[in-house]
Image 1: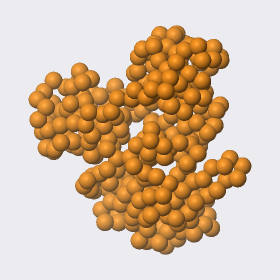
Image 2 (image 1 turned 180 degrees about the vertical axis):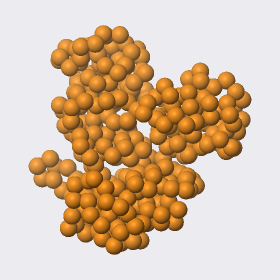
Image 3 (image 1 turned 90 degrees about the vertical axis):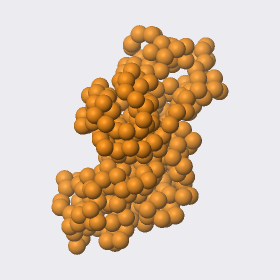
Image 4 (image 1 turned 60 degrees about the vertical axis):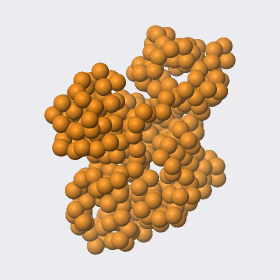
Length: 322
């Protein structure tokens, strides 16, 4: 390869010579059967996913970032990923007035979906524009509320929720939990647990539920991640899993995978300031980082096919690893 060079970071919607280089390279190696159009479309996204799956430990997210372009042999050394012009906390909904609402208006205006005043007042026009965007971006829920997934899809979610975002925690409404159709899911005093693994204390389970509720998780999702904390790390936020075969290390109770690149500056967690050290400092940190990942990847990193691509980016197809 190496006959062309591409700047990072390319995502669905990117255009230009760097995209042509990616498409040409994937075509050359038999990974791409679409047009070399210079537009990063769904066919390009799927081809990049397939390339990433075939070249572990690349992060399987369909984006052509530094590591993926380097593996292709075409990285130019330039990262032209434009920083967002603003960031928003979530959720933002009709009746709100805040800098986050203003940020939503600005980014929707840049997409020619909002023509109202940029005043930070989340009114009917803003809600209609958000709903229009959500309808164009499945599987986002088209309800006119800029929740965490909508803000993440817009590329402006800060990852740091400054206020209780919803009533989905309700001071512990998740307890007692019901049985979910997951392998070895059982209950210990109403607390979800994996098989005979160590289960979370009520205090730690409340912490997990609270952090996921802040990011918009419903009660069933809160309960699922209490189960995952038992499954992955015995609800021990200091846990580290060393894998000699892959030379990987995964961190805290949610086993956040380092080899996948998620902690690197352009990774899903690295962009939000999470490191392999600070996620192990407390259960709140571990759960907060895991919920940040959940916003982008849904349950993907913890359930088959263990991929970490935004659900609004399209069907991933064959299995891959985070």
